[in-house]
Amino acid sequence: MNQHLAGVLVALAAAALYSLAVGLQAIEARKAPRKDTLRFALLGRLIRRPLWLAGAITGILGWALQAVALSFAPLTLVEPTLAASLVFLLIFGARALGEHVGPNEIVGVLAVSLGLAGLGWAAPSHSPHHSGGVTFAVILAVLTAIVIAPYLIGLRRHAPVLLVAASAGVAYAFAGLGTKFATDEMHRSTLIAALIWFGVLTAVSIVGQLNEMSALQQRPVTHVAPVVFGLNVLVPVAVAPVLAHETWGHSSGIRAVLVGSLVLVIAGLITLARSKAVGAVYRTEADLTSAGRPDRPPRAIPASVPETSE
Image 1 (cartoon, rainbow, N blue to C red):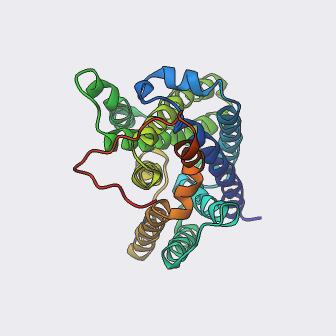
Image 2: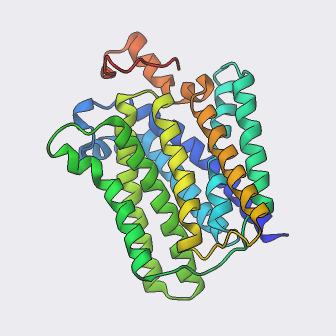
């Protein structure tokens, strides 16, 4: 079997597990008190809830499949394929929750499908190596700064929700890069370096999880998911030529296909993330608590920002 195809199939399986994990964890995040936003007490509270813990374990299984996919195919192809988890959330929302799937959702799925097909055709060859040096360190330092920015701002004032969501997306992108670097080190049999990268990506993933859960406490998924998923796709693909030795070909035509395909994937993801069917997966339990139970915290939406329909 072609290595790119094998990588895509495994990445799709990982995406399915990630979508299940997102749905399970979002249910519990909306029930947590807002006073724990951007505090590790939020994760401490959530990890004691069986449903959230089941989501975390499912996400870990998805990550293991992501690592396998990256051993077959390049970042440029694997990371956008993982974002197909939104397609699985759409299917779940439609079949299990009875949400209507309209023209916008169909266009979103088609855009993602065509974009992935284009990336599969034009993606660079897989390389089991990554770069190092000053450029490598600078890029990772910039990504780290974005991940921790909400906490630095939060020392002085409340961090904007958009920044919290963006830092979550960048954290997940960083974790994807770390997974690639760890698999490279395992390929080279440098196990200590691989373990270091596993530690780094685990820490970044935990912070990303906290940031995403915190953002979901304050804004509906239609505000949070497009930012998180968009950056999770865009960042690894953008830095792959520099960090992962993934040359985007010497032909301007191939580069145009890569860019166009990436635009299609991201546009499709944004469309799906704003879908009522996808939003329903996140808000199912929140609706139950608001309808008949008092444990749902009020959702803080600034008066200047109109709440979109979910």
